[in-house]
Image 1 (cartoon, rainbow, N blue to C red):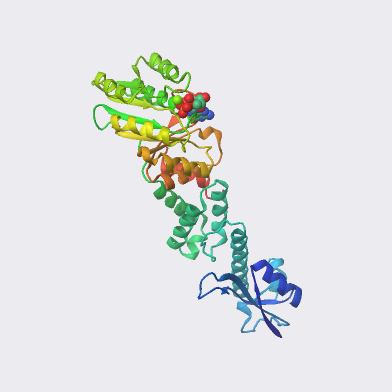
Image 2 (cartoon, rainbow, N blue to C red):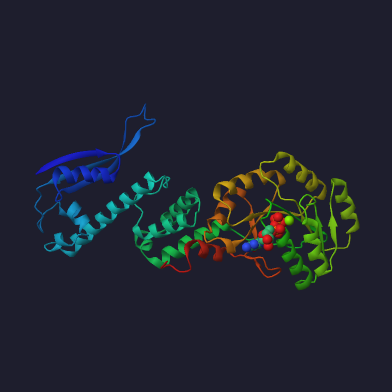
Length: 385
Ligand SMILES: Nc1nc2c(ncn2[C@@H]2O[C@H](COP(=O)(O)OP(=O)(O)O)[C@@H](O)[C@H]2O)c(=O)[nH]1
Ligand SMILES: [Mg+2]
């Protein structure tokens, strides 16, 4: 019997070395990650060390057999090597093969830049959710957090129970989402402002909410718009104001805010539209901030489109922080099939979600999401996704 140790940058490379030097019947005795090189422990490279042997005779009473996994067993899914082994031995081998497959999988993810401190002993059962969340474009740091919390919360047996695993991951997502906070008219003269990039659907959403509160909840609603910049923006809001027979005030300058507020002493809810702007335009941010300072709204909803790319989303939510938004409203769910944006936005925005919109129809295409629904959107409806 020859025993040799191989060091390589990843598992595939290590197995390739073992296979080409010792043949396909070589047996893996041990696989582990080691640190190599570096300076006083810093900048050391993560390598894989594989100890392999060949010419081992597998007999049913071999004392070392349960810890061994042959390459042949891996490639043929353990079938042919099992004729003279007992059920327990077979189980041990399957466990070993699973572990190696896990390591291979994680290694591939690391190479793709997808992994970030993922537990190498993850069971295969959780991989499908890992992949699903990547497909949903959930930020990798959030995925790792959710998966790590789930693996910590469950035993090995529970992790392999589809229903328990799905339920636990769902619970993790629900607690990440936390409570949804719609507009609650907790005081008279409740003022809500909407900020966000151009074209995300601020005005349309305001029309939907105005209809909801005035027609369905019988509240006295007023509208105001500070979007005097875009051609047709004022007319767009006035059109909805006319349909609902509610007043629409136009704010050109900061001074107009006081006049508007003074003339609207007897309303339940004032919805304030603002102009969209490039999130990197400091001048425009300052202008809206000046307006909000005078308006002193109860809520500021930052409005973003569900189809926004993750990188842009981070820029928008960070740059708009100066406008002290306290709720995130996400529009255009009908235009995307990747829902990671919800978790990514919460992660950057650090506040609560309010409404989702999913179409151009006023007033129907708006809803109050639930954390349960969001978790299903991310993980799929059932555990057997
Ligand atoms: N597909 C889709 N389109 C929407 C949604 N909300 C608004 N829109 C459309 O997006 C465009 C811009 O909307 P608008 O309210 O003017 O955006 P604003 O510039 O942010 O005020 C219009 O054509 C709307 O009909 C939505 O939920 N889904
Ligand atoms: Mg608008």
